[in-house]
Image (cartoon, rainbow, N blue to C red; front, side):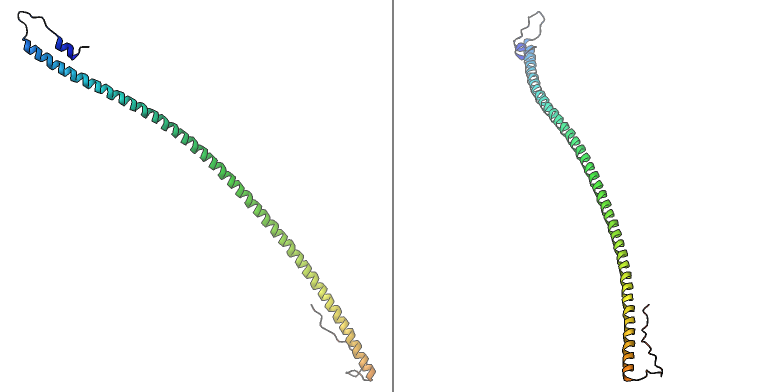
Length: 177
């Protein structure tokens, strides 16, 4: 590669009809200056290219890290979604089981209440029948007692009962339906 110093040191052989030395020197000086500027610019561009290459590498590494993080996030979301679905299924099954248990308990409770109602109705009827029998037996006893009392008093006093005959009429109570 030619350098600016090589251009300045270059000497040309002189011929009969050669170039003017001042013009050639001036041209060589301009070329050396331009070449030096181009070389400095080239070095700056190389440094800039190295810097950009390092930055690109850093971005690639960040991109890989971001992609890895995104993949991890996707996997985590899939796990969370699957877990949430399983939890929802479990909650639903639990709610269904609770609802079935509550329905079964309600049916059992209704059945018990029907049985108790039937038993109470039977006890009420039995109580009514016994009470009716007791009242009827007491009325009969009352009728006998009243007849006995009326008969004893009439007999002892020598009176005839009302109506003129000697037959005693027992007191009759109305029967309870």
